[in-house]
Image 1: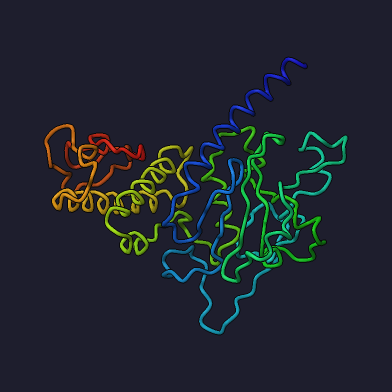
Image 2: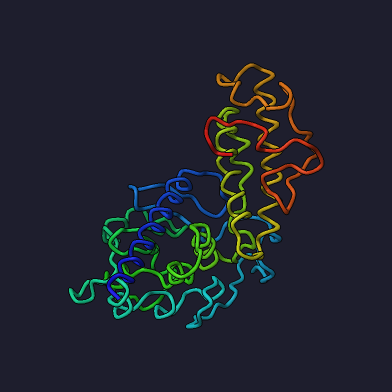
Length: 319
């Protein structure tokens, strides 16, 4: 039994290191419509999720949107389904209980649950009425990622009991199943958007194209390349189609077209210092036709022609 336990812990540590790699690769990506992220150390990523973003109706689920001045009733729920239509949640459905934390932490004999590295009262100054701040962390001492609310607690849950509840991790399906299933960082991100943003958007990873269009051209190439790489992972590593799968693919196609148009324009202007890194393998100065699209079966290639994303070398390593 000791050998089996040691092997299991070894596997969990290996997976946790992979998760930390996902944090580092994702934490600096900008251009999402429903959230923004930044890294705070190797093990911690902060994510600010919009409460009520102003985007068109058809970007949301089919729940009716209240007209101006009209309040749509929301009921608290103790069910396992956390969706923002149930805001504010009963804290028993939103937070891990003290007993559960003691069982999961591996430090129950010391009376230690699952606290974050720093208490939430240090981050109250970061509160924003338009968004809710979360901490996603993969602490080595827990061998499992968890998520804590860092600001705007009262919007998510009622009857909170001070710091004890404020520093309790969320009861997320993604983090609770992480040790047994192939859960990725983007599964956690999608669940956070679903439970926080009202009305819940169909595509939690919706791209803010205005953000990219307003960047300087060279920054457009880097930022869009990073986003394309992320969306490819979300699409390719899915275990099954999600409600947002088709929407992710649509944004991926549109952003890829934008990316190559920008690269082509900069090359024509001689404005890319490392232009050799963008030279296609087949013919110099040849780029995919803008009518090409990424196929649903292979998001790493462009359909309708022989040109593929892998036909280009990117010095950033993003594609």
